[in-house]
Amino acid sequence: MIPSLNPSLSRGKGRSFAAALGLALFLAACATAPPPKVTPGPPPGSTPAPAPVEQVQPETFADLPGWDAEDHAAAFTAYRSVCGAAKDPIAKAICRRARSVESLAEPEARAFFEDSFRPERIVGEGVMTAYFAPEYPARKAPDAEFSAPLRPRPADLVLGGPAGKDPMQRQADGSLGPYPDRAWIETEGPPDALAWMRPEDLFFLQIQGSGVLTYEDGSRIKALFSATNGRPFVGVANLMRDKGLLAPDNISGESIRSWLAAHRGPEADAVMRLNPRFAFFRLAPDDGQPPIGAAGVPLPAGRAIAVDASRHAMGELFYVDATAPMLTGAFPTYRRLVTALDVGGAIKGDIRADLYLGQGPVAGTEAGRVRHVLRMHRLVPKPGDDPIGTVLGQGAPK
Image (cartoon, rainbow, N blue to C red; front, side):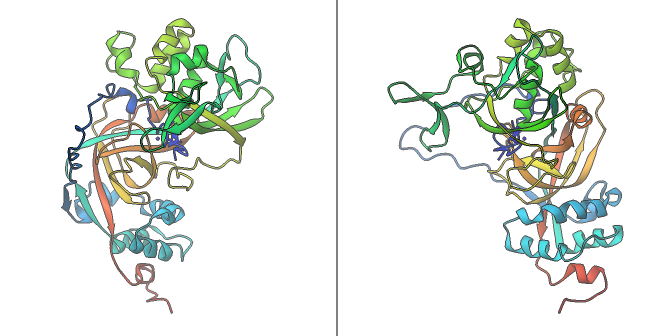
């Protein structure tokens, strides 16, 4: 989710953007989920329980709610720009055919999808949230308002653990231990700073995984995900609601950020430290391009999702049907073709998606209100000769 934190959230990312943190979107996304439960692993020598088997139901395009109203031409443009992320040989062949033309009008684009894929519903319901690439003011030196350091990856953070992928802290004697939590980093950690931000802005940047910083002189620079401390992500929305800090129907990202800004200092710090996960960053020139997801391609706004990579492959095409919003002020439905291009630390399960909505405050406001009941339909590639030539009446290419 710059994942994830696509924060990349880093979300690859690093989430890249949504991946590493994941997009662990907290705005209203993953933040409204309860703290993760820690379950013990299987006893030594036992056989691990198999992963749940995904149940699918074959269907037709006529079964997809809102398919007739979809902007198929826009969906084709987005698909064409990112379909190279797919690894399936049939999907790669379809991608090559899509890229043989610059664009398709509405009827031809719809025919392309219907001729190239077959839909199947993943049985059950889940949750769709959303994330975005934020833009925040920053300073090159601290002051009373911009007091939170954007920290680089610490020199004592190394990868270790059983699989060699867990963030660990190298101790003075050379041994490895769990990396400390947010509270320790903020109070005892190295004072290194790449830039200085408002504390609540930094907190949200860590959840999103990457963003753009603007200095007083108008210069801009990208803050990109570098690493996390490896601690579990804990969304603060429900915790703030339970403490009476926010109304039960008003736990959107904008409400959380407003409360943190209004209570900047010890009160807000205590709330933010309920989430022990901490993200580190690196700086890069602002090239004006969208963030890169875990699949290694730029994320098209409104047409990319972060998914659970243990359940779905990068580059897979889905039709999402998200309804019944749970947060005040949200759009009633999101029905559209999207591509799995990112991952997020809080994006887990077969029917779970984090929709990338773009860059800046408008996208951020919308993302903070997305928490909808989700039904997912996978578009399975069909072997074929030349759907592009067929829909354009050109016949097979020579």
